[in-house]
Image (cartoon, rainbow, N blue to C red; front, side, top):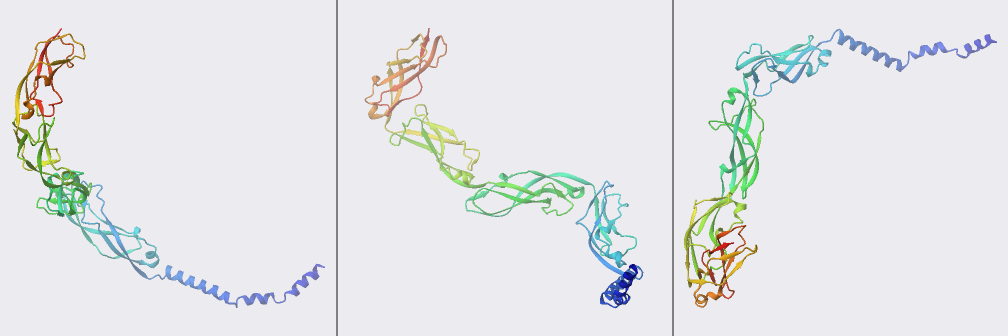
Amino acid sequence: MNKNIITEEINTNPNSEKNKMNIFNTDIFAIILSVLLAFVIWFYVMSVDNPSYNKTFADIPIEIDDSSMELSTYMPYEYRVNVTLEGRKGDITALTSSDINAYVDISNVTESGRYTLDVIISVPNNIIVKEQTLTTISVFFDNKSSTVVTVVPELVSYVLEDGYEIDKSTIELDVTSVEVTGPQSLLDTIDRAQVNLVLGNVKNSLTVRGTLVLINENGEIISNANIKMNRTEVTASIPVYVYKTIPLKLDYKYGYYNNPNTSIQITPSSIRIKGEASVLSEINSYLLLVIDEKNTADNFNTTITLPNNIINVDSVEQVNILITRKNTVDKRILVSNMSVNNPKNFNYELLDESINITIRGDSQYMNYITEKDIRAEIDLSHITNASGTTSVIANIIISDNYSQHVYEIGDYKMSVRIN
């Protein structure tokens, strides 16, 4: 039975060998064979018969290692070199910029000065440097140092409204100095750090930010990439001033002085002041003092004391006050009508029976006022545990019929014995 099965299987595939032979005649086999042959040829060319190949690598930084030196390196800018390399194509195409090292030899640099140094290109062993755009570079070596430089403002561009002024000496900066580091020989040429301020059309005080530049003693800008400042910008607060003439005025403690009975001359009658526009816009006059009509001379001087943010342009410090009274008379009168303010219940004795006072007022009222219209109040409220004779304040009180037009002149006291 097994024999028959085998015979049958053989008989059912009479063309199997023939089918195997037909595979080599198909398109698929031709394609596969072509790919294999191409790979073999490529591998041969690249590995055995690879021609020379060039490629340029751009912007390779030139390194200077000065870490072991006492001097520091200073260059006008960062040097970079373009390098053309030659080698087998496979090796060249496998390279990146990081495989190329450009540097200079500083072993012969021993003191400060400018040196021309050869640029050395380091590449893998199987690569040749065909061309390089820089063969030498100029490098300056100097002692690295630092110094502190004063910052000064400089108004570069602005337009002022009429009547306005900028006082450069009053400009406030958020820093008054900066630290500068770099070659000592360059630091020695610095005179100041200048912040250039561009203001535009100026109408009020303002705050602006400006860029710092270093200036030498000839007023020239020091421009060198090897000099570094710890900050490059400064904020400036710029007060803008305006001038104004304001009248000088007086005020009165009791209101007895008025145009019909008093003429007051102030010399000078006005002053010229300067201040920030925002401040002066609120000021229309200056109050010299409040006059106490009961205790003032007819002719005296007083001092002008302006706030710190206002400048007295004319430097006028003293003002004369001349008081001229009209239709006003003085009168002596003896006051014996007295009362005592004794809130602490002292046992006291008044040593005077009356007080001789001077009153002043309009003529028409002074003709009618008498002693009975005036009272003296002896005030013991300020005494503390006193005994013996003391002097206390006597307040003069004029009746309502005359108090608006008549007043006492000066201060009065009375002697009192405290038992």
